[in-house]
Length: 254
Length: 378
Image (cartoon, rainbow over all chains, first blue to last red):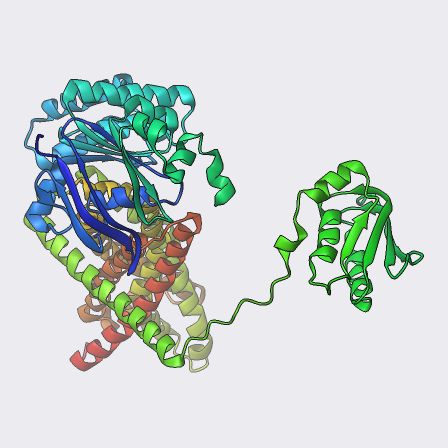
């Protein structure tokens, strides 16, 4: 098997000294869409924030394309960060800049490209997410779905190898959300980007995810790993069964 | 007009065997249940050892509050053979009652007091204060390093942002600085004139206004205006970015929030506070002059008196303070913004902390300056 692009090894994460999720190990292969599933409060966004180096884990390693982001400092850390792009749950676009300026920011900071080149690249990235005509709009002037797409464009500014998406379809209507799924598939096929997606939207999981892991707070870790169809059809784990049976049972036993 | 009057009643009915019957009647809703609540409990407690039947045949309406009244009676622990039952509650209301299992609402005692030994609490507090102090010192270092790095590489400043910040902090504050500066001069002149005129020394009001404004009030009032206008704005802007994950976005893009957000604000505060202070100084002197006019002292005499009294040291002593004050205000605002927690009230809290914190630090810094100037003989 090819070298995995992300390798998480015996990872324990939490707040302060209190461990939330313990002893997690998994690998993400190059070019796949990998989804992190779990109910609300299961720690999936927290796991993501560890994987992008915002938080330091209590123990364990997170190898991003060969660099352990859990331990890297200075130049190594920067070079790991340059290989990833992150689209946050809220979009987190810079409100005082137009969509194009948001996308340009990383280019301006890291490259010596001429102005014209940066402009063109920014517009091309926005074109990838279908927002070419909104390049000069401020984030507040476009809809929530467009903001999320623009955030993906910004995350792709430096052509990262891995894109992390935190709940891309949260708060979107089903049609917009399905459009976003198609966008992810198109980018995966067209650019060969590896995606790590945090989500709890069933339709979107079956559409985009090649493999998933499922987190559970009471089990304090990963309760299942595999292809979503296999988990749905074959898993005998009660947490997984509840999740895929329209998540109805989860409330009853909570 | 008020809410429609609703009435409900609770009265004892004829006993059935050894069981006591309580009759409920009327409209049991959130407005009528209140008066009944304690009466019902008292009736329950006074007959602790016999079964209690609540006859709800007379109830013609019962909502959530009414059901709560019934559940409250049924949830209390009772001796065996002395249970509480409800009967004759009409159909739609009965279904509402069946939704709940009274025993699952068993009355809970007060939560067990968590006893933390004094030493532990003192230790926790101390660790908190130390941690806070460490954070602040680290932030001083980080922002100083970022300022130096930026000065070494001035082209990396985001010019548009820097100009915008400078405009908001400086130019937009001009009207209020003009007004406050003038009024401070007026107030100072009026207040001192009352006493000094008794000695016929009207002219010396000029000395007091000039020294007071140039040395103390000009820089301090300007800095306090900045704390209220810009320190709070910095905390709110940066705090909102933190809540919106924009700070996280910067970090994962490998861009330092300190270099990106704090440095331009620090530089703006450092450069513009002295400028505003100079303007406030001038306005203060004019305010004093205006008052002196009304006492019949001509402008020329007033300014001549100011010139003989005031040295360059007084003027520049105040201006030097303003450099420090401006930096301080910007620094506290940015620090509180970056320290913003999660949730909608966090930004408001940071803003308050920024203003209060900068005013405290301003006065503290001013007293340090007063001491140092005193030693230096300025």
